[in-house]
Length: 256
Image 1 (tube, rainbow, N blue to C red):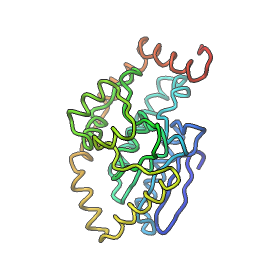
Image 2 (tube, rainbow, N blue to C red):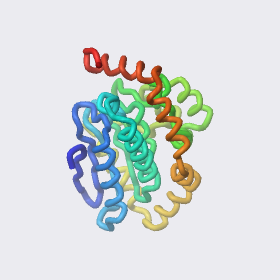
Image 3 (spheres, rainbow, N blue to C red):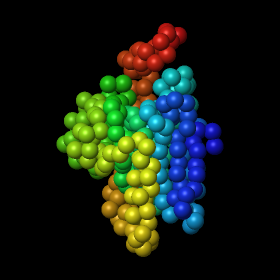
Image 4 (cartoon, rainbow, N blue to C red):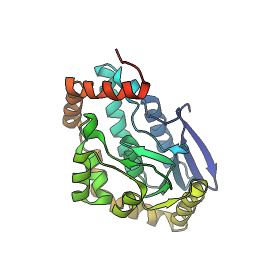
C-alpha cells in the first residue's frame, strides 16, 4: 500500500491515511481504501476498524492539483470509483470509528460520515462539505449521508453554503460525536470500537445494516445521470476557473 498504513491491534484494523502532509485523495488512495475495506469485510480475524489520518489532517479531501490535470476519461473513472468507495464504506457491516486527527473538509468529511462514530481531535480544525463554493455538484447520495447525521434542514443549509465548521459546532449539530486531545484520540477511538465489539456480532452487524437500509439503498442506486451532471459542471469554464485559482493559492504559483 502506497497511500495508507494498516496495523492490527486486538482484532481491530487501524487504517491510517498516509499521503503527503494533507492526505489529499487521488485515484490510488481510493483504490487502496476500497481494496482494504473489502478485504476486512471478509476477514473473520478482524472485528472492527479505526480510520484515521495524520496529526493536523484527517484528509484535506480530493487532490485538486492532481485531478485538475485528469482528462475526461480519467475524471469519469475517478468519480465512479469515489462514489463506489462511499457505497463500500457505508455498507461496511463491522464497527467503524473515524478518529479525525485534524482538518476534514469536503471528501474528508465524506469519509468521516460513512463511519458509525466520529471522534475529532481538539484544536482549531474544520470539517464540513464545501464543494459548492469550489464549483463541484454534490450527489444526492452524499447529501443523504450528510443528512443521516445532522438532519435534512441542517444538511440543506450547510451544503448550499459550503459551510465548514469548527469542532464544537460540529459536535453540537451531530456531525461529530466527541472530541479528544490529539495524544489520546486513538485511545478513545479504540475504546469505542471495543464497546461495539463486545456485543454479539451478528446481532450488532445486522442491526447496523437494518438501520442503514435506506441509506445503503441510496448510495447503491445507479448514479450515471448524477455523474454526467457532475462531470459536465467539472469541465465548465466557471468551475475550471475556480479550481485554477484554488490550485494557484495552494502552489503559490500560476497554473498553465
